[in-house]
Picture 1: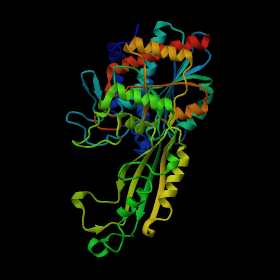
Picture 2: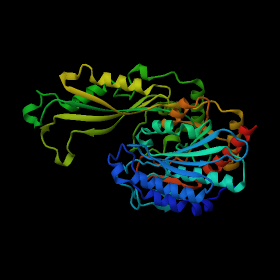
Picture 3: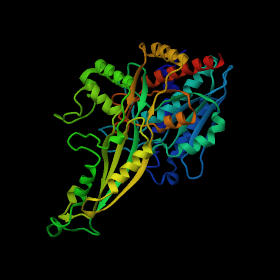
Picture 4: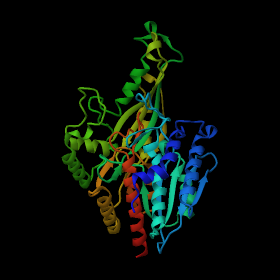
Length: 466
């Protein structure tokens, strides 16, 4: 019997709601994460719930020295399958970002109808509950399935910085991985199963331009000492056309495969110009790109630069007539899926630091990198299983979409396990607001994802044994 919303409400929602109250920020946002213990507390909550829900599984929290914890839930195979299926998610969270809407709060979960609002419930706290409930459903049905390892990390929002060492440590346990199910993605609507076809990579760089050792009265120094903000602006002109947003270094652009161009055109035909209507833009704002297809490709296959942080300036209400000593900008550069993030990072540092404008002191520091990913071709059994599961659960065939964000885990596993079958899906749809205020989890979508995962694992068991 498929899992129902009532089943999820009874078996998982109370623990998920408790998880939502924990401010378990990713280590990049909480340098004192080890002292606060929030990540460990969240891992222990998920571990306790998993043990109670899946008694036959081995549940373990692992924590290498100085690294964030990792939760594994290992369920032995039932039947003749010989490979391992890995079900991936993460428990660390983004910070609240800002003031949430009236009646909502990042760590005080609120349910409105079939939607739960709190930080981290959709990205990606639900994943552990969905994965374990799918395994529990297989156990209850007595269905054959491969050996399964639920892997929940705690550094994903910091680029999965701790994950490579854990993959080394877990290599004997993971063994021969035949299937990877990533539950940290989503799609364009809630009416069908969305599968991720590609992910962009990422480089974050903090650049500081310094012109003075201390601030000076602007009436004295302006016109003589160059503004540090202008220096930063000149540096940004090396990376981006300020009129169009086009990223200038040609090394960061790639030839977009024709099948991904065709997929973008199909999505544009399906959704029309309203595809980006959920963006809360101000009235009259003109979006970049001339067509919906161009915007989809720009979002998924083109590099793009964002300034995600600024430092060195006082708040507007206390700003005085002072020429400031320095300006710092935190740059987030999204990369085309095949681009080498380390090479891109080195290029950015070179472009920012070489020949500084007006001889200013310029320092560029790479804070994080993440590789992009392109989905490998599906094996016939998995293609058929996805079609059947989507039709049974959603009443529609699955759909593919490229993502503008990054999930470094997928590339890491692809490199370590060449040829592994990978499915990336999730619950992030319109209004989910991952990384933004008012993050929301659509509960019926969680249930559908659970049932799809259950069907795929049963199909994997049959394919592996054949």
